[in-house]
Image 1 (cartoon, rainbow, N blue to C red):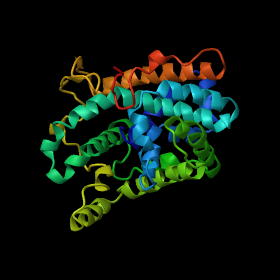
Image 2 (cartoon, rainbow, N blue to C red):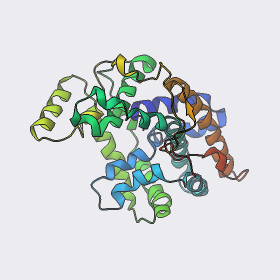
Image 3 (cartoon, rainbow, N blue to C red):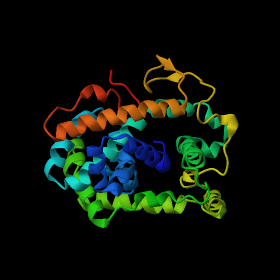
Image 4 (cartoon, rainbow, N blue to C red):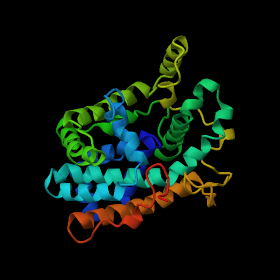
Length: 305
């Protein structure tokens, strides 16, 4: 998962390319749209719930039932709080498009990036790399102050909308994985994500040193500091694949390989997101079925064998 900043920025760019009818739907609850852009990552913040709820976000990322789930979601959104759930699901489709396009490369980078970091960071290379992408996004695309950027404000969803999203997870998503998820628990996960991001938005430079110091004192891995955006780009790590290193197109296949830059991957994801949202809304209106060919991989970048 490219982190919060990248996903919100990407969703905003997709929004700008939507037909006016779909823009107006997203505008009915723009904050739900941006929260939706965090995809199943929202559910990672149930990590302290009892099994199997604490793994629901991970299971969604690795499952191949996204098309089926979107079909059920389309039927749900016809009648259940469409003013919030439709924008939220448009955001979810943005997340799927970007994740499924970039994840094979991100997992590929887990093989070489550890050489640039101490052993204590190796387990969290995935998150550290994504925090680097967030840094690039703020600096080069949002053109904001990297240190002062408050990413948690992207998740300023209203309490009423948060509960509607929690109800959607409870009634549509969790049953698809054989789980009983209270709507309040799912809604709380959204709130916890915002709180966690507020902690890791290091606007002074002091917070990283404090958090890292506590981690070292407790001999704990970089479970929190990995989420803090770096202070500068590490050019030798080639975060954007400007050198066009070949990587597997799919996470679970060594061949074929491709050499896209991260910007090119995002451009492909942008086209995919527009197609996904268009097809999904046609399904909501009863004009089409979910096009399963638009979901060839899971969120993690694996192709179904």
